[in-house]
Length: 298
Image 1 (cartoon, rainbow, N blue to C red):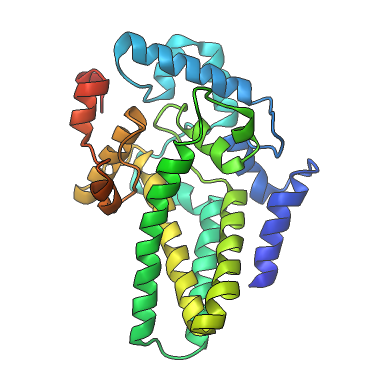
Image 2: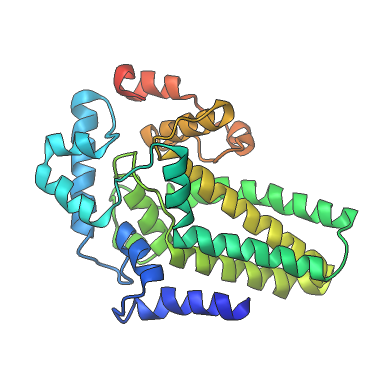
Protein backbone atom coordinates (compact mmCIF):
# COMPACT_ATOMS: atom_id res chain seq x y z
CA UNK A 1 0.00 0.00 0.00
CA UNK A 2 2.72 2.48 0.93
CA UNK A 3 4.66 1.61 -2.24
CA UNK A 4 1.51 2.37 -4.26
CA UNK A 5 1.03 5.73 -2.57
CA UNK A 6 4.71 6.48 -3.02
CA UNK A 7 4.49 5.84 -6.74
CA UNK A 8 1.49 8.14 -7.00
CA UNK A 9 3.37 10.83 -5.09
CA UNK A 10 6.45 10.50 -7.32
CA UNK A 11 4.29 10.65 -10.44
CA UNK A 12 2.44 13.71 -9.25
CA UNK A 13 5.20 15.80 -7.72
CA UNK A 14 8.45 14.84 -9.48
CA UNK A 15 8.07 13.43 -12.97
CA UNK A 16 5.65 16.13 -14.06
CA UNK A 17 7.98 18.81 -12.73
CA UNK A 18 10.72 17.51 -15.00
CA UNK A 19 8.33 17.43 -17.97
CA UNK A 20 8.41 13.61 -18.14
CA UNK A 21 5.03 12.48 -19.41
CA UNK A 22 3.30 10.04 -17.09
CA UNK A 23 -0.09 8.91 -18.49
CA UNK A 24 -1.54 8.48 -15.02
CA UNK A 25 -0.85 12.12 -14.14
CA UNK A 26 -0.44 14.07 -17.35
CA UNK A 27 -4.07 14.05 -18.45
CA UNK A 28 -5.39 15.44 -15.18
CA UNK A 29 -2.60 18.01 -14.84
CA UNK A 30 -3.14 19.23 -18.39
CA UNK A 31 -6.90 19.23 -17.89
CA UNK A 32 -6.79 21.77 -15.07
CA UNK A 33 -3.80 23.70 -16.40
CA UNK A 34 -1.45 23.04 -13.49
CA UNK A 35 2.17 22.59 -14.52
CA UNK A 36 3.98 23.13 -11.23
CA UNK A 37 5.09 26.78 -11.53
CA UNK A 38 3.66 30.06 -10.28
CA UNK A 39 3.00 31.61 -13.71
CA UNK A 40 1.75 29.36 -16.52
CA UNK A 41 0.87 29.85 -20.18
CA UNK A 42 -2.65 28.58 -19.55
CA UNK A 43 -3.32 31.44 -17.12
CA UNK A 44 -4.04 33.72 -20.06
CA UNK A 45 -6.78 31.37 -21.23
CA UNK A 46 -8.43 31.37 -17.82
CA UNK A 47 -8.15 35.16 -17.60
CA UNK A 48 -9.85 35.47 -21.00
CA UNK A 49 -12.53 33.05 -19.79
CA UNK A 50 -13.08 35.30 -16.79
CA UNK A 51 -13.49 38.35 -19.05
CA UNK A 52 -16.01 36.57 -21.27
CA UNK A 53 -17.88 35.23 -18.25
CA UNK A 54 -18.13 38.71 -16.73
CA UNK A 55 -19.31 40.15 -20.04
CA UNK A 56 -21.93 37.43 -20.44
CA UNK A 57 -23.28 38.05 -16.94
CA UNK A 58 -23.38 41.80 -17.48
CA UNK A 59 -25.22 41.60 -20.81
CA UNK A 60 -27.55 38.65 -20.28
CA UNK A 61 -27.61 38.27 -16.50
CA UNK A 62 -26.70 34.61 -16.88
CA UNK A 63 -23.61 32.49 -16.50
CA UNK A 64 -21.94 30.45 -19.22
CA UNK A 65 -23.35 26.95 -18.96
CA UNK A 66 -21.73 25.21 -21.95
CA UNK A 67 -18.89 25.36 -24.45
CA UNK A 68 -21.46 26.16 -27.16
CA UNK A 69 -22.33 29.42 -25.44
CA UNK A 70 -18.64 30.26 -25.23
CA UNK A 71 -18.26 29.67 -28.97
CA UNK A 72 -20.87 32.36 -29.61
CA UNK A 73 -18.60 34.90 -27.93
CA UNK A 74 -15.16 33.85 -29.06
CA UNK A 75 -14.51 30.82 -31.25
CA UNK A 76 -10.74 31.10 -30.82
CA UNK A 77 -11.04 31.15 -27.04
CA UNK A 78 -13.44 28.20 -27.15
CA UNK A 79 -10.94 26.28 -29.26
CA UNK A 80 -8.08 27.11 -26.88
CA UNK A 81 -10.19 26.14 -23.86
CA UNK A 82 -11.00 22.75 -25.35
CA UNK A 83 -7.28 22.04 -25.59
CA UNK A 84 -6.88 22.12 -21.80
CA UNK A 85 -10.41 21.40 -20.51
CA UNK A 86 -12.56 18.36 -21.19
CA UNK A 87 -16.03 19.46 -22.37
CA UNK A 88 -17.08 15.97 -23.47
CA UNK A 89 -19.63 15.89 -20.67
CA UNK A 90 -21.33 12.55 -19.94
CA UNK A 91 -25.07 12.53 -20.61
CA UNK A 92 -25.94 8.99 -19.51
CA UNK A 93 -25.18 6.92 -16.46
CA UNK A 94 -23.09 4.53 -18.57
CA UNK A 95 -20.97 7.32 -20.02
CA UNK A 96 -20.57 8.92 -16.62
CA UNK A 97 -19.51 5.69 -14.93
CA UNK A 98 -16.94 4.86 -17.59
CA UNK A 99 -15.49 8.37 -17.56
CA UNK A 100 -15.37 8.69 -13.78
CA UNK A 101 -13.76 5.29 -13.25
CA UNK A 102 -11.00 6.36 -15.65
CA UNK A 103 -10.09 9.44 -13.59
CA UNK A 104 -6.73 8.99 -11.79
CA UNK A 105 -7.83 11.05 -8.79
CA UNK A 106 -10.86 8.81 -8.24
CA UNK A 107 -8.69 5.70 -8.60
CA UNK A 108 -6.26 7.01 -6.01
CA UNK A 109 -8.82 8.09 -3.41
CA UNK A 110 -10.83 4.88 -3.84
CA UNK A 111 -7.62 2.87 -3.40
CA UNK A 112 -6.77 4.88 -0.30
CA UNK A 113 -10.23 4.37 1.22
CA UNK A 114 -10.17 0.61 0.55
CA UNK A 115 -6.60 0.30 1.81
CA UNK A 116 -7.36 2.06 5.10
CA UNK A 117 -10.52 -0.01 5.50
CA UNK A 118 -8.56 -3.22 4.94
CA UNK A 119 -5.88 -2.08 7.36
CA UNK A 120 -8.47 -1.36 10.05
CA UNK A 121 -10.13 -4.78 9.60
CA UNK A 122 -6.74 -6.44 9.94
CA UNK A 123 -6.58 -5.12 13.52
CA UNK A 124 -9.72 -6.99 14.55
CA UNK A 125 -13.47 -6.64 14.77
CA UNK A 126 -15.08 -3.21 14.62
CA UNK A 127 -16.49 -1.91 17.91
CA UNK A 128 -18.85 0.84 19.02
CA UNK A 129 -15.92 3.16 19.60
CA UNK A 130 -15.01 2.79 15.93
CA UNK A 131 -18.48 3.97 14.95
CA UNK A 132 -18.14 6.99 17.23
CA UNK A 133 -14.67 7.80 15.87
CA UNK A 134 -15.89 7.43 12.30
CA UNK A 135 -18.87 9.70 12.91
CA UNK A 136 -16.59 12.27 14.54
CA UNK A 137 -14.39 12.27 11.45
CA UNK A 138 -17.51 12.56 9.28
CA UNK A 139 -18.70 15.61 11.25
CA UNK A 140 -15.25 17.16 11.12
CA UNK A 141 -15.14 16.71 7.34
CA UNK A 142 -18.29 18.77 6.84
CA UNK A 143 -17.08 21.56 9.14
CA UNK A 144 -13.68 21.82 7.46
CA UNK A 145 -15.24 21.47 3.98
CA UNK A 146 -17.35 24.57 4.58
CA UNK A 147 -14.51 26.47 6.25
CA UNK A 148 -11.94 25.73 3.53
CA UNK A 149 -14.39 26.50 0.73
CA UNK A 150 -15.73 29.71 2.23
CA UNK A 151 -12.79 31.20 4.14
CA UNK A 152 -9.88 30.00 2.03
CA UNK A 153 -11.06 29.36 -1.52
CA UNK A 154 -13.39 32.37 -1.62
CA UNK A 155 -11.90 34.45 1.17
CA UNK A 156 -8.29 35.11 0.08
CA UNK A 157 -8.64 36.54 -3.37
CA UNK A 158 -9.06 40.28 -2.87
CA UNK A 159 -10.06 42.20 -5.99
CA UNK A 160 -7.58 40.50 -8.31
CA UNK A 161 -8.90 37.29 -9.85
CA UNK A 162 -5.59 35.45 -10.14
CA UNK A 163 -3.13 37.14 -7.73
CA UNK A 164 0.42 35.77 -7.72
CA UNK A 165 0.21 34.48 -4.15
CA UNK A 166 -2.77 32.29 -5.10
CA UNK A 167 -1.10 31.00 -8.26
CA UNK A 168 1.65 29.53 -6.10
CA UNK A 169 -0.92 27.37 -4.25
CA UNK A 170 -2.23 24.67 -6.57
CA UNK A 171 -5.49 24.20 -4.63
CA UNK A 172 -6.37 27.91 -4.87
CA UNK A 173 -5.42 28.01 -8.52
CA UNK A 174 -7.51 24.97 -9.41
CA UNK A 175 -10.53 26.42 -7.64
CA UNK A 176 -10.17 29.85 -9.25
CA UNK A 177 -9.97 28.25 -12.68
CA UNK A 178 -12.93 25.99 -11.96
CA UNK A 179 -15.20 28.99 -11.43
CA UNK A 180 -14.47 30.61 -14.78
CA UNK A 181 -15.01 27.48 -16.88
CA UNK A 182 -18.52 26.98 -18.38
CA UNK A 183 -20.46 24.97 -15.81
CA UNK A 184 -20.89 21.74 -17.77
CA UNK A 185 -17.44 20.19 -18.08
CA UNK A 186 -15.62 17.13 -16.75
CA UNK A 187 -14.86 18.38 -13.24
CA UNK A 188 -12.01 16.02 -12.35
CA UNK A 189 -9.97 16.75 -9.25
CA UNK A 190 -6.19 17.15 -9.74
CA UNK A 191 -4.38 13.98 -8.71
CA UNK A 192 -1.51 15.83 -7.05
CA UNK A 193 -3.88 17.66 -4.72
CA UNK A 194 -5.56 14.41 -3.69
CA UNK A 195 -2.19 12.78 -3.03
CA UNK A 196 -0.93 15.73 -0.99
CA UNK A 197 -4.19 15.94 0.98
CA UNK A 198 -4.14 12.23 1.82
CA UNK A 199 -0.49 12.29 2.88
CA UNK A 200 -1.12 15.23 5.22
CA UNK A 201 -4.22 13.62 6.76
CA UNK A 202 -2.34 10.31 7.15
CA UNK A 203 0.49 12.10 8.94
CA UNK A 204 -1.97 13.76 11.32
CA UNK A 205 -3.88 10.52 11.93
CA UNK A 206 -0.84 8.43 12.75
CA UNK A 207 1.35 11.18 14.20
CA UNK A 208 -1.24 12.83 16.44
CA UNK A 209 -4.21 10.51 16.93
CA UNK A 210 -2.46 7.12 17.01
CA UNK A 211 -0.39 7.85 20.16
CA UNK A 212 -3.59 8.91 21.96
CA UNK A 213 -6.33 6.71 20.48
CA UNK A 214 -4.27 3.75 19.34
CA UNK A 215 -3.49 2.57 15.83
CA UNK A 216 -6.89 0.89 15.11
CA UNK A 217 -8.96 3.98 15.99
CA UNK A 218 -6.56 6.29 14.16
CA UNK A 219 -7.04 4.12 11.09
CA UNK A 220 -10.82 4.28 11.52
CA UNK A 221 -10.63 8.07 11.59
CA UNK A 222 -8.46 8.11 8.46
CA UNK A 223 -10.77 5.69 6.62
CA UNK A 224 -13.90 7.69 7.48
CA UNK A 225 -12.30 10.99 6.48
CA UNK A 226 -10.99 9.56 3.20
CA UNK A 227 -14.42 8.10 2.42
CA UNK A 228 -15.95 11.55 2.93
CA UNK A 229 -13.44 12.91 0.43
CA UNK A 230 -14.43 10.21 -2.04
CA UNK A 231 -18.12 11.09 -1.64
CA UNK A 232 -17.37 14.79 -2.09
CA UNK A 233 -15.39 14.15 -5.29
CA UNK A 234 -18.12 11.93 -6.69
CA UNK A 235 -20.94 14.37 -5.97
CA UNK A 236 -19.00 17.30 -7.36
CA UNK A 237 -18.18 15.40 -10.54
CA UNK A 238 -21.82 14.36 -10.90
CA UNK A 239 -23.19 17.90 -10.56
CA UNK A 240 -21.17 19.09 -13.57
CA UNK A 241 -22.44 16.33 -15.89
CA UNK A 242 -25.66 16.36 -17.91
CA UNK A 243 -26.88 13.06 -16.52
CA UNK A 244 -30.54 13.33 -15.37
CA UNK A 245 -30.59 13.11 -11.58
CA UNK A 246 -33.37 12.03 -9.22
CA UNK A 247 -34.55 13.68 -6.02
CA UNK A 248 -31.78 14.52 -3.58
CA UNK A 249 -29.02 14.32 -6.19
CA UNK A 250 -30.81 16.92 -8.32
CA UNK A 251 -31.03 19.20 -5.28
CA UNK A 252 -27.26 18.79 -4.81
CA UNK A 253 -26.73 19.85 -8.43
CA UNK A 254 -29.05 22.85 -8.07
CA UNK A 255 -27.29 23.97 -4.90
CA UNK A 256 -23.95 23.80 -6.66
CA UNK A 257 -25.32 25.66 -9.67
CA UNK A 258 -26.45 28.37 -7.27
CA UNK A 259 -22.94 28.49 -5.82
CA UNK A 260 -21.45 29.07 -9.27
CA UNK A 261 -23.96 31.87 -9.82
CA UNK A 262 -23.39 33.40 -6.39
CA UNK A 263 -20.05 32.45 -4.84
CA UNK A 264 -21.21 33.62 -1.41
CA UNK A 265 -23.72 30.79 -1.06
CA UNK A 266 -23.92 26.99 -0.79
CA UNK A 267 -20.34 26.06 0.09
CA UNK A 268 -21.19 22.53 1.20
CA UNK A 269 -21.57 19.55 -1.12
CA UNK A 270 -24.38 17.15 -0.29
CA UNK A 271 -24.88 17.83 3.42
CA UNK A 272 -25.89 21.47 3.94
CA UNK A 273 -25.81 21.58 7.73
CA UNK A 274 -22.90 24.04 7.90
CA UNK A 275 -24.51 26.28 5.29
CA UNK A 276 -27.70 26.28 7.36
CA UNK A 277 -25.79 27.10 10.56
CA UNK A 278 -23.74 29.84 8.87
CA UNK A 279 -26.71 31.28 6.97
CA UNK A 280 -25.14 30.68 3.54
CA UNK A 281 -27.88 28.42 2.17
CA UNK A 282 -29.76 29.85 -0.81
CA UNK A 283 -32.01 27.93 -3.26
CA UNK A 284 -31.21 28.08 -6.97
CA UNK A 285 -34.41 29.90 -7.90
CA UNK A 286 -33.75 32.63 -5.36
CA UNK A 287 -30.22 33.08 -6.67
CA UNK A 288 -31.62 33.18 -10.20
CA UNK A 289 -34.03 35.95 -9.31
CA UNK A 290 -31.23 37.97 -7.72
CA UNK A 291 -28.23 37.24 -9.92
CA UNK A 292 -29.48 35.99 -13.26
CA UNK A 293 -32.19 35.89 -15.85
CA UNK A 294 -34.35 33.02 -14.60
CA UNK A 295 -34.95 31.59 -18.07
CA UNK A 296 -31.18 31.15 -18.51
CA UNK A 297 -30.61 29.77 -15.04
CA UNK A 298 -30.86 26.02 -15.49
